[in-house]
Image (cartoon, rainbow, N blue to C red; front, top):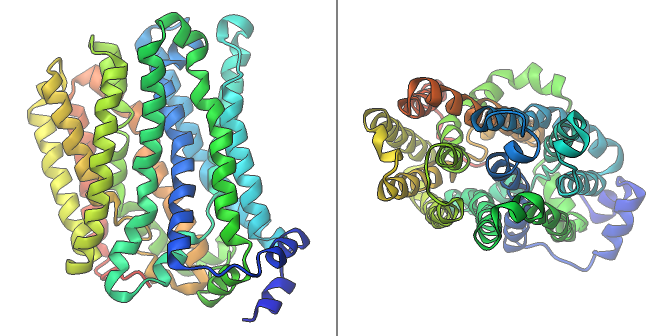
Length: 444
């Protein structure tokens, strides 16, 4: 497809941007950088909300409830974004078809950053009553809806254009956005938590990370538009046939593949919030340990996670992606059994808590590094763009969206062994899905 033809089929706004960027060539390194920046900004928004769901929202929006109940209410609102995300994907696919990829991405990221930043201005429950909770819920839904539209095809494009012998390495690059986003979010909350009085932190300190989100998303938007607006990027997408199709068309031809793809990463996604959001909640409710201190422990764990993600790429290039997923799911199952048999490691023992978090982050990185597009090679070029987005949406919904809520409730009712039970269920779901899909999951 020629540049002229690609430009002719674009929306006028996108066409102008393509003309302005016509001198810019797109390299795999450019795509990789754009992917990491974009993913990091998205994860930052979600982790800021997740951390605040523990440290802030029970006091600011649910002061009428006991600390545990207020945290459960906060986690219920936290889950709303994962319900809204598939709906956002469907809507923004329509925007993409009508107005172009650049317009879709701009609207989605402004909505994501704007809704996150708007949370920083919300009055408390004590100021306006239940309306404060309703506004928080609306903005959380907007976050999830916008994230569905933030899918730009860069991760799939990176995999499609990677050298065959290094596809595992290139597949892990987009996943680095998760630990980077968590590091920034946890560092900001740790700084304000440690350096402010509890009253000042609850009054205004927690708002700053939310306020930063808009700036971070604008920077990420321009980094991505710098690539998306180039004719070369459009040519590469067209070459890989990475264009949206209707959900009905996708379901008619690849419904089973989408469902298998959604369950393949459940071990990783179940672990995801059990080493990031849930431990903060458990310690805040049952321990005297400083939240700022533990957030820095998690910061170091996120560094371990980033290293493990990189290692997963190197290992996958040697033994294959499917084997990496099988091994990591097995290791997560062992870790889950250990959590069932030794729940005391997550009690008052600070050393045990640190070990638990770092081992969890290491396993998360090893497994999460190769979950991107785990079975999308079976979708073919025409269905890959929409299929990869919806597969990811469903995996997050089933594996991670309700994890903090469910595990916190079960743990308080039946003990910390429930953390291991929940995690084991995710590992078994991954192993079952991999047994149904015996392909090598090549990144094609």
